[in-house]
Image (tube, rainbow, N blue to C red; front, side, top):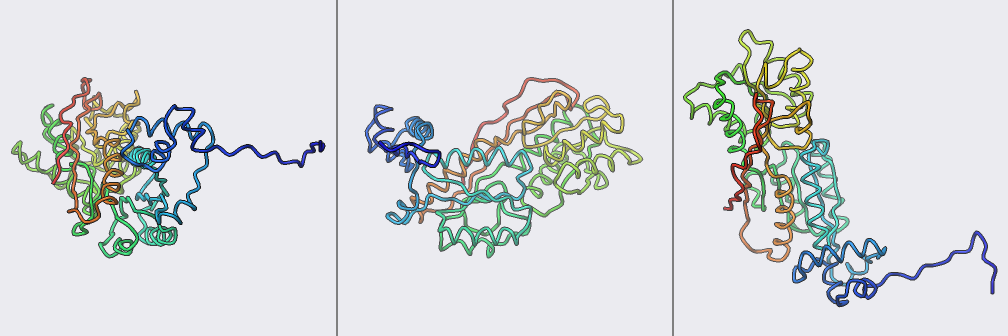
Length: 358
């Protein structure tokens, strides 16, 4: 018997589909279909198979499978700003849903760069990716995304590209901002500031329209001087709050385009010696978990990020199966989460759990 040395390599037996099947008490065929995302296998079973495969260290030979089927199992996932907690939560839901269908996400943080977006799409073409799920960079055109058409389907989420003809899932942004603004009016405020982001994206446009819609409903004229356009980051929220509170007649309440911007606004108010919910009411939109922190306790309109991410991945799966069906446009209605930053502590109010499709 040869002596073992430090350089001796002892190969472990490769884990097989039968090993996974035996450990779960299911057939080898069931395991194979589950790992390939076949929806004939129950979702719970697919989750169990994927979990056991990871536990046992099973290695799926994706390259070999691709040669045999022409399917790589790779999906591009691109977002314009991954530092925003909203997108990390949406992407996590997308990635989980893709895994259950046997697909793996290649993630790219676009940093609002169309050039980087173009390079990423080219890389996906080189990898022969099965499809693309994307929240595009500012200024993205139909032509920018059309270069991917001969590779696989495209699903847009959160930000639409009008006229693209792609499947789209987003929030009902108009309703969300209408709800946020209504709430401050219902609390008795009549002079509201709006920290917004201009008209650079469909989200910004729809949420601005929602803010104005609530003013019309209450017969109150929106003051353009209280609508401050800033960058869509916490620093922008900080800047916006300082500009608003420096007005000769500052607002008594502030509506923020996003929670991410609202975090910056809350920080600015604290630094000025003002307490949100006591000195100034403030409300955001998106429902990110950071807004629940005790010192912030931010009122918000929750746009159901988990549901949005799952729906985006499911749209891609459906498009891969049925490439010729009509494009789907899905808008997920929001849920109000009213907390102390508006001056009152209420139980979370589920005002809507509906999904509308057109």
